[in-house]
Structure formats: C-alpha cells, structure tokens
Amino acid sequence: MLERFYPHEYAESVFSIDYGRLYGLGYRGLIFDIDNTLVHHGDDATPEVEALFAKIQGMGFTTLLLSNNDEKRIQRFIKNIDTLYICDADKPNTSGYLRAAEMMNVGREKTVFIGDQIFTDILGANRSKIACILVKYIRGKEDTRPGKRRALEGVILKFYKKSKRYKAGLGGIRKKGDI
Image 1: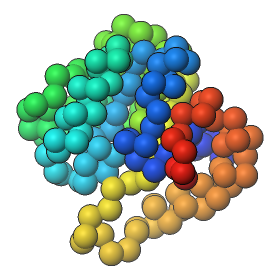
Image 2 (image 1 turned 30 degrees about the horizontal axis):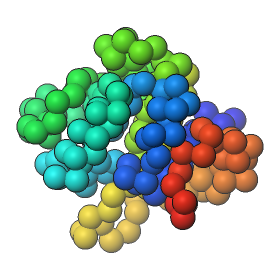
Image 3 (image 1 turned 180 degrees about the vertical axis):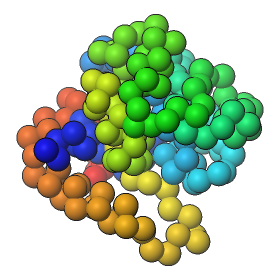
C-alpha cells in the first residue's frame, strides 16, 4: 500500500544526484518540480540552478519543468534557463507526467522525475510509471516547523528506508555521503 508513495531514490538535493550515472543507465529525460526542489518556494532561479541545467543539458539530457504553478511564475523562473515546461500541471494527476515524457520525445522508460513532495511529485510519477527521485525539500528561514503533510511524509520515509526499493534504487545515483 505505501509503495505507491516510495521514490526509486532519495537524495540530499538536486546537486547531489550523479547525473552521469543516470545517463549511463540510459535515462535521457529529466522532469523537475520547481518550488522546494530547485529553489525555496517562490524564489527565482539561482546561478547554481542555471549552471546545473546547462551542465545536464550539455550531457545530452532533455529537461522539463512540471509545476502546479501558473505560467507567469515559470516564465520568471526560466528567464536564464532554456527548458520545456508544463504549468498548472495538476500533480499528482498523471496527464502532466505523460505529456512531459511525450514533449521530451524520450519515452517514460527513459525519464526520471525529481521532486520534493511524496503526495504530489512522487505519487504522480509512480502512477505514470516514471522513475522518480525524492530530494529533501528546501526549507526557508521562516519555515520553523514542518506541517502535517511533511510529518506524514517523514513516517512514510521511515518505512521506505526499510524497503527493497530503497536498497535497490536506480543503480547508485546518490553521490557518496548522501542520505
């Protein structure tokens, strides 16, 4: 029952993922959530995020942002990033995920979704049969206590870390010293 909430991998951040290893495993499309995955909620892209997209696209990956945000928010975020996107995605509904794989022209079996929320990002990717990586959410200074949803995610993660899926992962894409 809980397996539908389990990611294929769990990483410290988008910067701690071994993208070279993912590419070597045959993945060619990367779908990213924005808020609390790439930047704190509502923030613009940082130079580090812009450099990350340049790096992974230079490796041969096609990228796409899948977000429940509106187009204005995404346009502001991608000011210096050349990437595909889908706004108002209605995650965890599968239609956005499947459309993303189609737009990237790589097929869902060669696509990985990267996000910070189990109940939207990971659930939607699993329902769509797309491999997924959960990253620790980016916490702002004003985020003093996690909400009820984050607390429930913590319980699910405890079970996940004891599961076969956690042990198998995506073939060692976490960098050494990661979660």
